[in-house]
Length: 58
Image 1 (cartoon, rainbow, N blue to C red):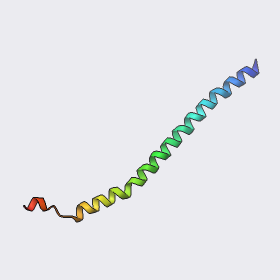
Image 2 (spheres, one colour; image 1 turned 180 degrees about the horizontal axis):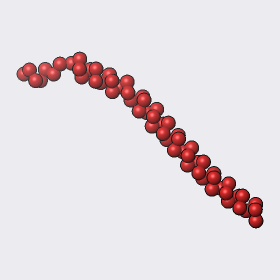
Image 3 (cartoon, rainbow, N blue to C red; image 1 turned 90 degrees about the vertical axis):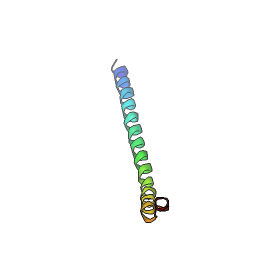
Image 4 (tube, helix red, strand yellow; image 1 turned 90 degrees about the horizontal axis):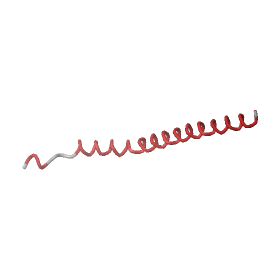
């Protein structure tokens, strides 16, 4: 009976661990993607500031 109880506890813990690992991987992936986007956003902002809007003068 103890063996069955231990087996069930280990199965439940395995599910918890896989959920935590999956969440951690998803968070790290999201952080990496957002970090990769930052230089493009900064470059776009610099280009917007550096260029004049000639349409407003016409």
